[in-house]
Picture (cartoon, rainbow, N blue to C red):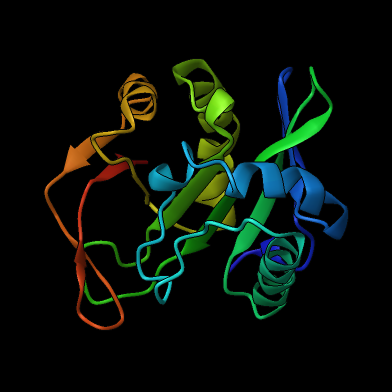
Length: 187
């Protein structure tokens, strides 16, 4: 694995900045993770039953602490997504190299959790344009996989525009549960 777990890089374009999640993000993230329009679009596959709906400061703070602990264990990276226009955190992005016995082995698994007013084709396309090249390098993978359910129309449009392809392959969880609605991009 590369040094992404030694020093988390800051990634950005003219519109968004991605930096490692911090405790000071909790109030902003609470708006994201208590947004009932957004939560159904989050990828909670293989997350031990967590649906990522957090409606209290304490729950959000515990989630951020967990994300920081998992980074220190070299499990995944969780970036905060900052809108440069509004200078506020509008979501998070998680990426890790998945090791498994299914078709998603050694892929860069990308999870994008955005507040509903940012769940737009343009925003998602902008964020993907920041992430794609670094994911291949930082997570030493040849495939990027992300989930987009049918309800996530704007996300699916952005994925198509960025050349992701829907796959009928299932991601198999720790307990054998099969998950669908994945899109992949080959290097």
